[in-house]
Image (cartoon, rainbow, N blue to C red; front, side, top):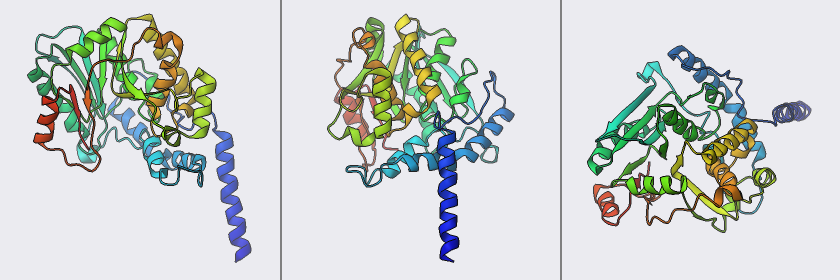
Amino acid sequence: MKTRIFCLTLLIAGAAFFFFKKTPHNPFDLGIAPKENLSQEDYLQIQEVLNAKRKDVELYVRNLYPHGKSGYSSLENNFIGRCLRGVNQVLIDPKQGWFPEVKLEKINAGGNRCIVTSAPFLRSYPEFARTKTEILRQTGFNGYYLYFVGGYPNPTGKEIQYVGVPYAMKIFAMMEAQKRGFSSVIWVDSAVIPLKDPSPIFERLERFGAFIHGWGAPPDYSTYVFPETKKLLKKLKGVDVTRDFYLNSVVFGLKMDTPLAQDFIKEYFQMLKLGTPFLSCFPEECVFAAIYGQKKFKRIWRKSSIRDPIKYLDAGVVDTPEKIEKARQAGFYFYQFNH
């Protein structure tokens, strides 16, 4: 019996080794072909692929996790949850009555400024996305609001190939806004609501070419990034994201019609093709920070000096109207729910 168990263990280990050797180039490559104008049938097939690939991606991430290394002992679930956010998406579920929604809403007088978000069918995310329309109108903002519930932003048809990459959709949603004619585009996470007119944030974006918000990397940041990911980003962009700057993408903006914004997007797609740069607890933010950390971007795109743009979620604290109102009175532009 012991011999059989030992042989079975070797067989499983060998299969895992083969998997990692076979697909080191991109663990999120699900073999999905590019296609524009995705139908409900297409989404059903893509959902089947996501469901089938979850275990493979989880196996890859668990194998990469540095068990026993100082600082990592309690973070495995964080890595699994964040790195699998792409393959865990629910894009469509007819049994639940969930079908992809894409809506472009005019806010007050309209204009060339657009706020975008995208939400999978998960917890309260869809409702957060839908309710922003009226809240934005109440702030006095003039512009448009583009949002996706379920489905996936796929402006050129090639983006759907990267549906398994965690949080990749932020740039894709911004590209969709540009495709619809908007140049000043700001991504806002779905679990975030505006508290007052965000026009000053757009003004800063239009002055410098981007809205970049964040702070110095915290001392323990390296434990939230796989050592292999840190080395890869350093090799690719010359930036140590664990020491330089934590770029927060809860609210992130680009002047889409500028050469620098297009350079940023081009480099982002290079990262997508590799997949491995997104292996961390902050998948898209580490990639954003690595690209932004290069001189050609940092020299032009100044870090935001706007005080208190976002009241961040308080872990374990129940959101109440009183807390939201307190954040509004304190001058915050956005409030992030503890979802």
